[in-house]
Length: 530
Image 1 (cartoon, rainbow, N blue to C red):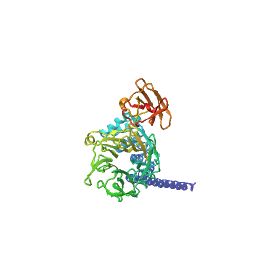
Image 2 (tube, one colour):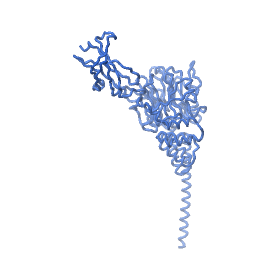
Image 3 (cartoon, rainbow, N blue to C red):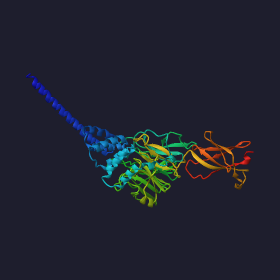
C-alpha cells in the first residue's frame, strides 16, 4: 500500500495536467476560429466564414456577437432558415441593438412567411427610432393581400435553359436573349467576395409557339467573348439598335483594400466584334453593380454604394452632353432608402423600374416602378408590382418590351439560396374563359359597300381552335344577329358557318392582352357560299 499511494497520486497529477493542456488547446483553437471567422467576415467571404463561426460558437455558446455574424453570413447566402435560427438565438439571449441584424432577421422571417415573428422583429426595430419606412413595412405585412390582387392577369414562366447556378440581367435583342450567369459559382462578387469563378455574358436564341410560350431553340453560348475578362463580366445593356453596349466588369487593378471594384465600360460593335471604347469616368472608387441606359445612350442610371448616399446601394443619374458624362446625382429619398436599390430599368424614358428591399413589399428584393419625372421622383412613392412579379424571395433585373406588356426578370423563388433563375412574363392579360358578345352580319357581294352589310339572324356558327382543329363552342345568332361566344383559353380561332353548298370560315383573332373590345362584328359574304 505504501507504493500504491504515490502511484495513484502520480496518475492523478498526470491526468490533471493533460486535461489542462487539452483545455488550453481547445481554448486556443476556439480563439483562432473566432479570429479567422472575423477576418473572413470583414472580407465578405461569407461561405468560408460560416464554418469558422459554427466551430467558434461551440466553444463560446453564449457569445451573442458570433450568432449575429453567423446570421449575417447565412443571410448573405439567402439561407433564410439558418439565418432565422442564428438570429433567433441571439434575440433570445439579450436585447439586440444591432439594427441591421434586426432588419435582416425580420426580412428572413418575411421570406419564409413567418409573419407574426416578422412583425415582432420589426416592432423591436421600430423601438430604436420612429422611422417611416419601418412603419410602412409593418403596414404592408398587415395588408399584404393588396399585392396579390389582379394576379390572374399576369402569366409568369420559368425559362427552360436555367442552370443550378445564377442567371440574371436579361434583355431581348432581336431573337436573342442576352443574360449573365456564373454557372460554376453561386453569386456575384458583390454578394460573395471569395468565389473563385466568375460571371460571364451569354446569349440564347428563343422563339414562340402559337400560344406565345417560349421555346428554347439552342444551347446558350458566350456572348461578346472578346469582352470577357478574367474576373466578373456583366450584366450589360445594349442600345443604339444593338450596336453599342454598356457593361459592368471588375477593374483590372486592385484598390487600396485589395479588391477589384465593379466598373462601367462602354463598347461598340465593328465587323461583328465588340471593342471597348471608353470607361465611365465617375464613381471609380465605388462598385457599380447594375445599370440602365436609354436607347440613345445619353441617360445612364446605375446602382452603387457611396458614403454620401441614403444607405446601402442607391440609384444615381448621369447624363451625357457634348460627349461627356455629368457628375452623378442621387435620385433622392422617394426612390432610395437606407437599404438596397438595385437593377434599374428605364422604360421608354418615362418609367423607372428597379428592385429594393427597403420599400414595403412581399419580402427581400421586390420590383417597383415610378414615373421618371422630376415631380414623381420628388413627391411620389414607387409602386410595388405585386404578385406574381414579386414573391417573398429576391425578384430583380426586370426588363419590358416597348409596349410594357411582355418581359423578363430574375428570381430565386423556386430553388432559393443563390440559384437565381430567369422568368418570362406577360402582364395585363385577358382572363379566360372569356365571354364575348358579338354581332353576326352578312353582305351579298365582296365588293359591296359597308352600307349593304346587315344582321344575320338565326344562324348556327361553330368556333374551332386552329391549333388543335377541335370544335370548342357552338351557338346561334338571335333575331338581331347577336350572339355570345365563350372562349375557353387564349389561342387562334376560326368561326365557321355552313351554307347550302359549302362551309365558309373566317379567322377570329384575339389579343392575349386585356383591352376593350367593344362588340366585335363577324361579317360573312353571301356569294362566297354559292
